[in-house]
Image (cartoon, rainbow, N blue to C red; front, side):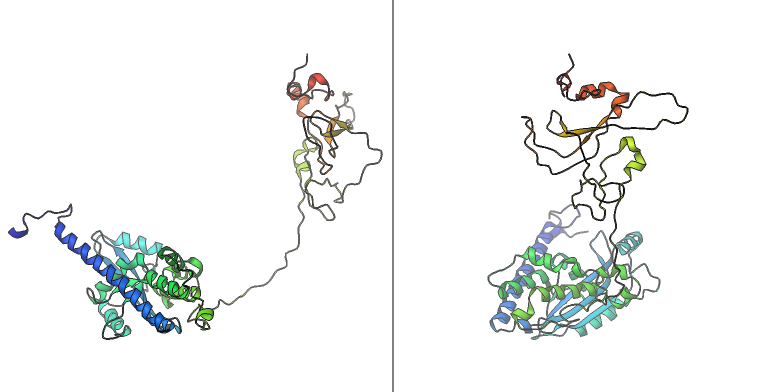
Amino acid sequence: MRDDKRGDEKLDCRGIPLADIKKEQEKHKRKIEEMRSYIANNVSVLHSGKALHCGKFYIVSTSYYVLTEEGHYSPAELGLVQFSLQRGIIKEFHMILKPVIPLSYGYMAQAYSEANHMLLEEENTSGEEKEDVAVALKEFVQEESNRLPPLYTLEEEMPQADAILSEICGPDYFSVYSLDQLFQHFYSVTFVDNPIPLSIASDILTHCSLDYHPSLPCGWHQTYQKDAGRYCSLSCAKRWVFHICDNMKLLDTFGIKPQEGKHLPQPIPAFGTVVDVPRHTFKDCSVESRGASNSRVDRSYVAGASSQPWQVVNTSGNRSKGVQNKPKPEQNDVGFSFTRKAKVEAAPAGAPARAPVRPKGSWSNAVTSSSPRVPTLAASFSASSVDTSCEDDFPALGARNGFSGNSWNAPSHKRGQKKK
């Protein structure tokens, strides 16, 4: 129960006094301003002294088992590297913490693990106690100028890293600063003519080109859960360093030759057998599958055929030869020429006589047309016979399209007109 002094204070929906919330917001603003001032001054001093490539920085990445509704993180994994532009990754730190799952959060922790780091999927996952991790972490991060150096992480992960480090080492033991802003100042003071905004710096750091590189995750992920290597905290910290070194153009800017494992990941060994795949030809089997009466253009690519996909080829696979004594092509009302071909079919033995089959038209090379309805066409393509077999069963369909029966070019049967 609150005392009488605070009895008249206004509360939010959670019962927290609004005055306390305002104080926390002001404290957060002061920390942000302090962070921005520290990063800008530190990078400026190093750059003015031509020692930007010699500065040492700590990059941290964290992960958790579960986040409760009250905003409490259960620490899971901690990855930390020290690097400089000159030496690349100098040393690294990695530990997996023993799972401590709050009551009634078991399912949420299991679901989060399956979608991310997979630390709860193996029965042999051994974690360290929180106190042991705190001792080792404090020994890894050495004081500089009588103060602890800040730990840099992605700006979007700053609240998470700050909460987890406070849970392990105590409140406000480490200062967590924005790696995005650090890289932005790195790039902007080095390439003065081409500075980058903070959004571009964030996109560069989170580029996915190294997410599944096999040499970056910790030993546990490489042994048990290789597919979850991109979520390994140590892998994240290393990837951020490599992206920074790659975009800073160390050789051109500082004369630093990148080293494998320090400024860029170890090369992936290539293995496998080179296979010379032969060139295949594809034959259109529409004639056999749909029947000769419903054939279409054979658009096969065969040896010796033209590179044009509309070139007609015969069954032997060679380019069709010009036919001797071709009949004079006729012309329809849209300017395309066609040649009538009679279809001869042998009647089976003992079958009654049938009426002759109506000849079908076949499109051939387009010729110069004097029709005002279409422009002049060059003789550039050819196609197969037009299937009008459906007109035998549906005469009205042919009449509607203007070529009923054998009088395709009759004036009264033009498309869109009715026979008088």
